[in-house]
Image 1: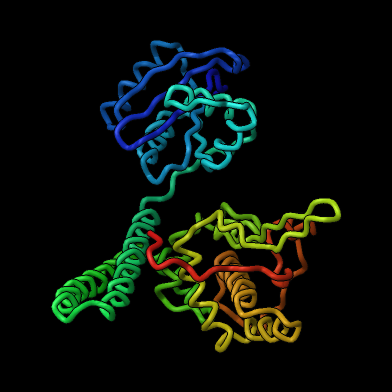
Image 2 (image 1 turned 90 degrees about the vertical axis):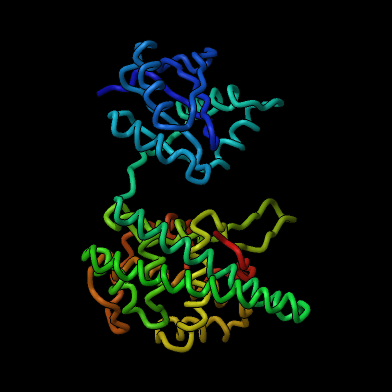
Length: 355
């Protein structure tokens, strides 16, 4: 079916504002409305769209936590096209329009105009089993980070407060153990996910927890065309600023990707420099060139991400002697996604709480 209208959605926890514009009339104010961010509000939106004679819309909203996931799924089930875009794109697009004020109705209009004038990809819902695995691994990651924070604080507290923290730490450890058991049960109930986790776990330096996090954070592997996309989804692609003859910026990781995945890969990369022959050779080569420790860790993380993509895409366990295929990605795209030996990449240690 052909898209007849553009629907910009400004989402929040309790409600969402919408701006509906016919295709080709992006400069018009459009029709505005607000609904509760509940299933009842979704049904009111459906009736409102029918009243506005908008049978097939292209809806666009920002990736704001998970407040918009239920609405996006509802619209997708109604056969509408849905795009979920990075909030940075909307923010900088609004700045390019010299917008000086901000309120929900205006934000919805800006999002509608962005959807009509910019290239946006259609969103596909995450399979329920993969979504549940992601919820479990992210919650475990959050509890582990909180556990580490409390352990660090317990060293500086008075004896009375230290005993209180120890009781809290004991409860956290029990909760973490319960979550790990739920992750194992979930994988046992879904053979395809268990197989993918086993493939990633076969990579030397990566353990089962990191393997489960990697599978949970990546989309279904058939949606990825090359390893550079996986690197970008983890936020491990380089970002550098050069301009003229005076600006020579130091390359940094973009970090525009999954923070829990980067945190998991950080420690895996440290271990892989010892136990993974491919990563170890890369690390030795970089150190011979005088690269710093953090730069080596960055390169090791990217290499692990490429190995993860490889085992998932081929369906074969990790083999350090597996012949590397000829690069099928043009050099420009490969450089944009980040090679393994770019100069002076900097990465701060991952924060303790990164839920």
